[in-house]
Image (cartoon, rainbow, N blue to C red; front, side):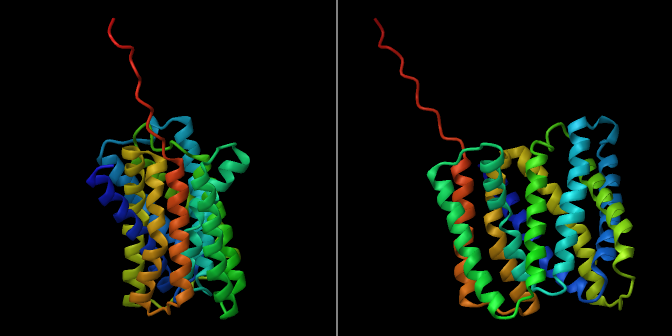
Length: 300
């Protein structure tokens, strides 16, 4: 892994984690599903325009890439982010980022249970560590008054993203990355626009804080982070790229504390550290081992 890949991975982790803080700022002042639908619509249009300017087109997408557009649009955007945005009306940004960070652990567990993917002992140990870390944080948080419905919605959202991740492995192969990003955003926008009116109405007090938080989520986590993720997967592969997810809970909790002044307890620090270690262990257990050197017979 070269320095460019490392910088890309860290940048992705920071951008991805920062979205929880700006989302918390948005959903306390605007209806979450309608606001998210608008965000996806803007991100999708901008992404497609950038793709066209780069010479990309939807006409060249393979059947598998179109499947990825639909699956990501429904599971990642409408379900994962939709549920997260609703849940963050009641739970803090740091807690939401911790729950979302369990996604790589879910992917590893589901791959092992349903797809027969074997893990080395390090991977099984990582899964156990992840569960311990989650139990520590959730136990203290729920006893401290965190909304159980919001917490449950966060875990369902992470499960939806795990399913999407397993379903579209390799979607970045074949090019047209920005076009795929833009199209799957539009799928999410249309889906949420159809669902949102049944649950909420547009009632927002527009302010400078709401405006900049919304613009940030459109451009940075919405477009830049997704684009960097696809490029990173192309560069170093999905397994190595997923290793950077272990940084997300740290950055998510830290940004929430710095920007929103959210409280950070000792159990949070301990639990986040354990979860990060578990995620890293799982990802390292998947990394291919070097092939043993081939021994050649001595010359006759």
